[in-house]
Length: 263
Image 1: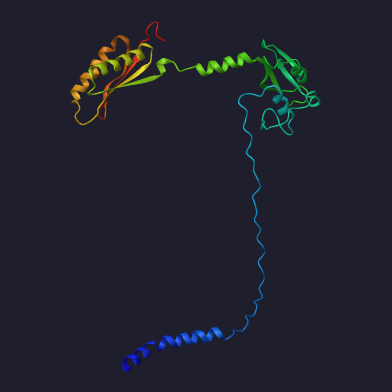
Image 2 (image 1 turned 180 degrees about the vertical axis):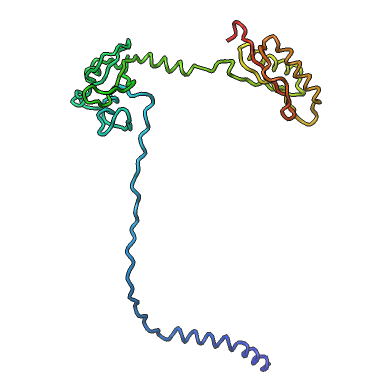
């Protein structure tokens, strides 16, 4: 028993010695650390980049009414190369110095006129003074606005007509796809749709689409395309592209023959 205890004490002796050294080091006071003299770094302050404001959105369309004079009176600007910015409406004293070339509603050039007088006579509910061009001033040779009196209804009708304007039917191509295994009724519906397009003068691209693995043989798809072409002959002006294969699909393009009464 005593032998075992002595063996265990011998095994713990290194550990106990290390603990004693650590305890002694903790109890012994350490000498103060001498300060190190070195130059201090310059303080770093948070900096912010200057604020950049986005340029204001350019107005849609030409300058109108007060905006014409505001742009003309902007310091350092010319109406030929203008950087349109948001400005307060010009004062009466400023407007008195502005002269523009005036074109009346009938298109007659009335020559140089005080812009202030034109604004005073303007019925803003019905008409607008619209800048249509610039012309050199006879004395200073500076770019001077040319304004025209245009009714608001005419401007509205012009915009409305532009929205309604569509491409000519013979320049527009429609597409009708038919599955190679389509049912008879569905095929008749597709052919009726293609006939409607062709009778309005549209170009129509016909496609017999290969769908699935258990589809018809190429000869059957050729026969289906030929049947469709035969059904559409009365409203076909020209076969632009004869039937051809694009992968496993068959395509053909027809030019329509416009029928009277179709729109």
